[in-house]
Length: 357
Image 1 (tube, one colour):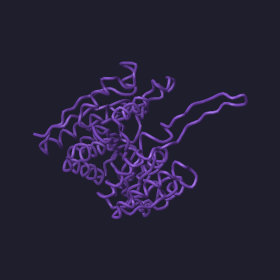
Image 2 (cartoon, helix red, strand yellow; image 1 turned 135 degrees about the vertical axis):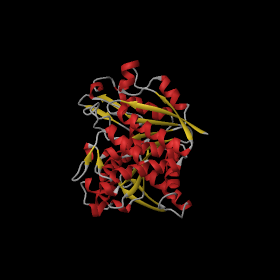
Image 3 (cartoon, helix red, strand yellow; image 1 turned 90 degrees about the vertical axis):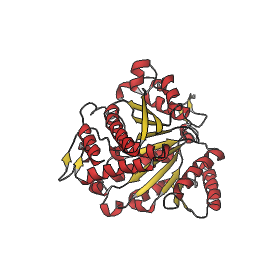
């Protein structure tokens, strides 16, 4: 029997609730498909701070390095905002990404027809949207040096450095071109090459890839135009390839095409080693423990884990189909409620998903 080792990181807020639902579903699909998932649960974020004082304990990182895939729920809480930057939950996530050398972030945005009226955009503009944002995750302005704050005679100045090496652009481009080949053979590269030297290098590298991959249709947009096009005509996009800062902003904008950020999964991948799979939404501490959380984004993150990280495509299809069946039947968590829908709590939504399997 095939075996896969999974590290579960429930984290904070609603994390433990949606993790419990997702684990039941993963056990169900693995039983059906004849493979075994061996789970190891570790702490990260606020939960780890409470236990160890560190947002990323050494044992958590080591366990993640020594598994086949990492499935995380959510981290963070306002109660930790007063801590020094290196002690906050978000620093634990950044440390995990760095420790696993995860440089490629994948955020799929797919309109599920049962939820098309949940979006704030008119349904004729979003029907059929199925795009993938490929974001470089470990470079750009978030990690560039130098950065800091200085006092001058007249003022206080803060600064960050946006920089990319050619090799960093090449490796994220390779990921995007391979993914495009599995989809609709289209890439839109987003930059600000009319202003930024770093974007000019980005565009040069992407054009070199385009010259070597003539079967892929490659286009370019400046980031401001791309932001406008995402709400004007999102169906034009298939794979959106961009850097860390632009990808952070555009992927959140794209998320709202679906009507709820509680529906969206993500994956972070490196060249070797396990990937990290997690929902896009936060820890929602205001509803934690009230059985109101939407577990679907984490369920879909688990489907990405099965498909990309573990190569269990049939099991991934089963989870995604279960989500569609439940939504088509009119079941909704509070964030998705609409006319004629049946409201369910987090645990009850999990039960309906199990039935749909």
